[in-house]
Image 1 (cartoon, one colour):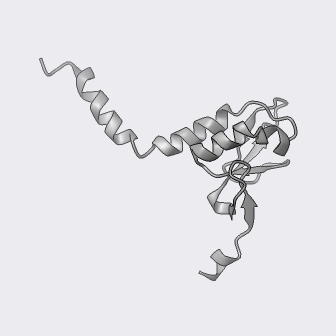
Image 2: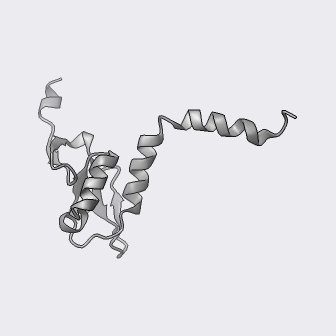
Length: 110
């Protein structure tokens, strides 16, 4: 348990609260020449990184404050980050939604 106390702290660009590095997503600008922001899943990509809690609330705050452009020097597109956060928050609901949509589509009940 001692190693948890010494984890590096990072500041979320949305809510501005600090948290353990393992609790936040690292964001970087896509290295292919675009200004799109992507999630650095392995936290190893080159370049300047920004940190964000994986929640819709922090994402909305970051967009409202225009934090992506400031933290990542002119970053524009955040679609990848939005997809990643939405996928993470809806993962709990997926089995229920899948079960309700599969039944009517089968057509074998008639």
